[in-house]
Image (cartoon, rainbow, N blue to C red; front, side):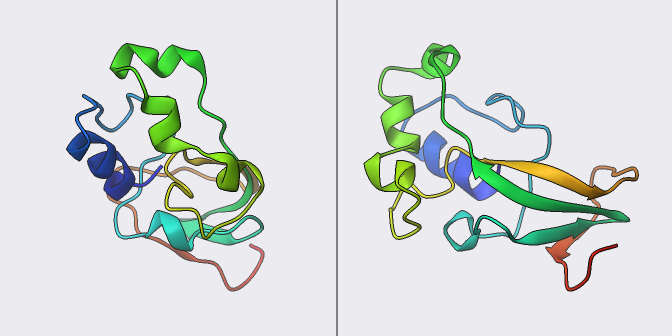
Length: 114
């Protein structure tokens, strides 16, 4: 999940915050609309690959009626990154290179495997 996406949902009136949506990693400085399946990112010594977009589940309803629709639509479901909701629900990622990450570690598009 991106912090910017969480802030976008909060601006729509949903009382969300980093960690509230079940994400393991929250980034800052990445545009969720530019993320693509198959992209690899490096966080400290860890490399991850975006493997699929998360489908928001009913447990998120505690944050308000309509949150699922605010995060995910038919275009997103079809894999169309043109959707204004693309990436708002976050992504699942596969770990390519293991390691330890900490709060504040930089994240960048990876140009190599490990």
